[in-house]
Image 1: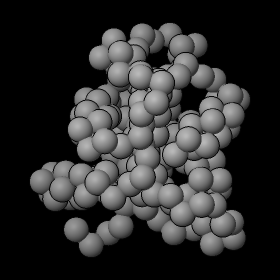
Image 2: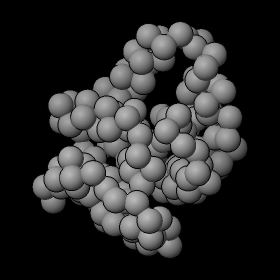
Image 3: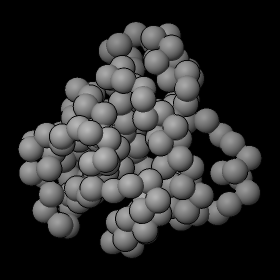
Image 4: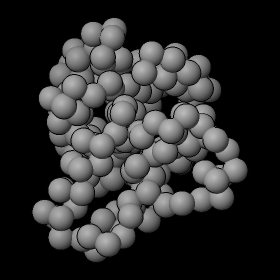
Amino acid sequence: MTRELSSNSALNEMSSPPQRKIYFCGSIHGGRQDQKIYETLILELKQKYGKVLTEIVGEKTAPSEEHKYVPGDLHRTYLGLLQECDAVVAEVTQPSLGVGYEIGRALTMGKKILCLFRPDAGKSLSCMIRGLHDGKNVIVRDYSIKDAPEILAEFFSSC
């Protein structure tokens, strides 16, 4: 695969957050209702916490971009990025098989994981995700977008 999944932006060059590598998870094919929220979270991550390896998740064109690749190549690329990352931030409000898979793989890799769920969206979070919370390596938090900066700061202070 020749195309990078994370795009370079002037914002990355202007700010100098810690050089963590962050893997962001959000629904791509399971539903794009939260794309703007993903975009907002990714911007916050880039500005304050490091390089987001999977910026494509927040882009409007993510589903059409992914269809340009052979599924096996895309899978290997995402797993490589997951292995490379220092931390995982997953927005889990929109149910997604892919996000659940990524969280499971990150867990087996020993990655530090933050799962964010918006209860006001009228959905229920799977017990399989909520039950991962251990208060140390896996944090599962209910949140509203206005609370996200504080929750991210708390999470990254322990990374």
